[in-house]
Amino acid sequence: MIRHIEFARLYNFRDVGGYPTDGGMEVRWQRLYRSASLHMLADDDLDRFHALGVRTVIDLRHPNEVTHRGRAPQGPSYHNLPVEHRRWDTAADYHPDAGVARFFTDRYLEVAQDGHAELRSALEVIAEAGNAPVVVHCAAGKDRTGLLVALVLRLLGVSEEDVIADYALTGLARPQMVAYWEKEHPGEPQWAGFGQAPAEAMRLFLGELGPVRDYCLRTLGVDESVVSALRNHLLKNPDIEAISG
Image (cartoon, rainbow, N blue to C red; front, side, top):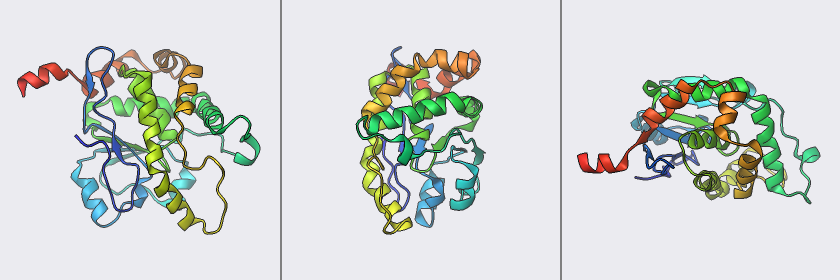
């Protein structure tokens, strides 16, 4: 199966299937995707997107981002769940001595502290088998999307190292992010961490958040049945399916 799905304008669109879990299972392909903002879809890209059979879109951007940039194409069920309550201020909060990874970790922890209702709702939407395939996106498909996908994968039993590696794959899309930003903001400077997805940021975040299952159940208030539903439709037994196939 192909993890990265190429589009002409849209970038950082990929399938999060295929990862093994600690229980000997494997995340199903073509059930959950992550992406940069779907407002970039047009022309042939729209045809390719619709061919994936996406039923549900979870947009983690602020409503004003949706108004300004546009939203996903009509068709799939659409949920706008703005998980980020505190806006980023790189001028005030980024300290070069602490590093880019530390800046991102602190922002992710803020989202984990503030976005309880939205994160819980997003997990509930993803857990409903009838909603799949689901696409989760924000602006670049890196930070807000990376956090939510990390929670899902850890609930499924994917190892921290694989979750960290999945997050860091976004770094491959950095040239496209930079090119898009420069087109939208000609002549404006970029801060040092723009477009980066350092593995250390997700490593620090997961370590400081603590056990993801405990966070989701106790802090977000996710019901055990939601975790069971996630596992029931997003996991497969690769040995059994290999035999039956």
